[in-house]
Image (cartoon, rainbow, N blue to C red; front, side, top):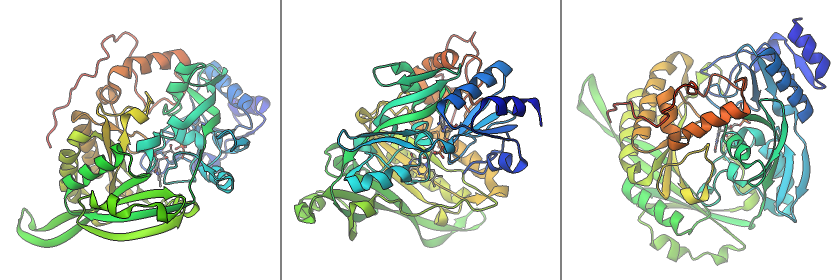
Length: 474
Ligand SMILES: Cc1cc2nc3c(=O)[nH]c(=O)nc-3n(C[C@H](O)[C@H](O)[C@H](O)COP(=O)(O)OP(=O)(O)OC[C@H]3O[C@@H](n4cnc5c(N)ncnc54)[C@H](O)[C@@H]3O)c2cc1C
């Protein structure tokens, strides 16, 4: 047993492990692309345990990273050669106040735990993602985008307060008013400025019934225009679209023989939450839209509607190089058409989920989750699963599509596949990049928290502007 384990066992109440099994269990994430192995896993039982582990790491100049369910995709939750804090043991809901519309819980609580407690009280967190197995800490560190984020922002936007252990081992309570600088950087900050131990989060009352319209579009322009209308005029309670390719023949003009002729169709799903389905003015809603066909109408109880549609397993031997880009609405059509044209050249387009969601910039105010500079934002996601042996060329294509999005004024949702160098980090954060660097130096002066995902400027570099160094082709 090495001395680090012995030291940590002396000071930490929770479990400390160096078994091969425990180290391997935290050496990969849902992406299956990056592998890193810490030398010790700590399962803290309290924020005091977390503070002691961080102080120890700072004293010994060891790196320390926090990991929850490991559903990020490019090593954001991994650690090489240092201490890994497995946050899932901090899993108690401490206060649940449906009367005041908030709850307070440990960072390792899953969203499933919260929903199971809240539904019987007629309340719900305002935004839920498509995965309830992830933790409060994990999504507050990323953003947490749902089908109603155009109205309520991200999950991080609905955070009321955080208990944070900074990179110096100080335990700090922060809110939008108190220690606000730390609050606004730990949220969506991927553990770069501190470890979240507790979270106070908003609740809202929900209506008991939902009706969802499944509408098919054959024209991307019409789809995007209808999304803008529905979102900016607040006509629906949630909205998402999924894109389906259809092979409508083959051409013999292809370079290597035949070339499939692919048309994309777009399914818009819009949902209304109501006290009674009789309250819905269906004719008024649908007649204002320009879909090609109304496919289906689904009535569900709210309890059933909010559950994630499917559980996505991580198949052995596969990698998930998923990407989400956030596009200014004015560039969305051009970007999406370019991406849809390219997709069949590098992934099995028939088995790759592709879709989009919407955001409104005034409803999200997270400096570490930058949005394009337009009122209406289109999120566009591609979620391929490929054998590990074939991941490299796919990643290269996705990196090119990332660069194209940044060049067109877009931003990346960096919970998914991200391979950024310094120029890309500058483009991602724009004018806020120098503040990100300043916050890192202030709250993690020894640079022990999560090295390896973010890259920072060297202190002597003064011009941190978002110099565009990429020349890209569409
Ligand atoms: C199948 C699937 C579906 C998804 N659907 C959605 C979706 O609909 N919407 C959406 O927005 N995202 C979605 N995601 C992305 C997912 O929400 C994020 O990756 C989220 O960060 C995962 O949380 P986690 O608990 O697994 O955290 P981890 O992946 O373990 O950690 C995420 C990041 O937060 C840090 N971290 C974790 N806990 C703490 C803590 N307590 N303090 C400080 N830092 C911490 C980690 O170091 C890491 O940088 C999906 C992912 C998958 C795999």
